[in-house]
Image (tube, rainbow, N blue to C red):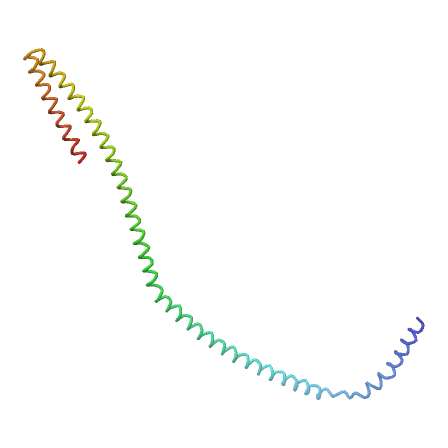
Length: 182
């Protein structure tokens, strides 16, 4: 520890001896000279910064001009693509509408066909039922006529009249069913 203190004290003595000699060897400029030097340095710095600012402004102007040219080219490209693509879009839309219309017509035709088949089947069933009823009535009329023939001429006339009325009604119904089936 003692050695450290000795080294420290010797360093302090050296500095104290050299410092006044050093200060005296330096010549301090006057205030006017110092002001002139600062002004000169400031002027150099200002001119240097002004030159850099002008150079930067010119570069920015060139970049702005380049960007304007690129923007104009981009706008021309967009306009060209719009002119070229727009007819294609309309054609595709027309094609899609036509396809949708065809699909709709096909689906409508299938639905109408199914409905027609259902209606035809229903009409056929109703016609068959009506024909069965007619056959039953016809059998009744024949039975009436046969029993009237067996009973005598007066009953026969009444039975014929009833049968002809019944036959007329049956013919009307049959004509109505035939027009439905046609």
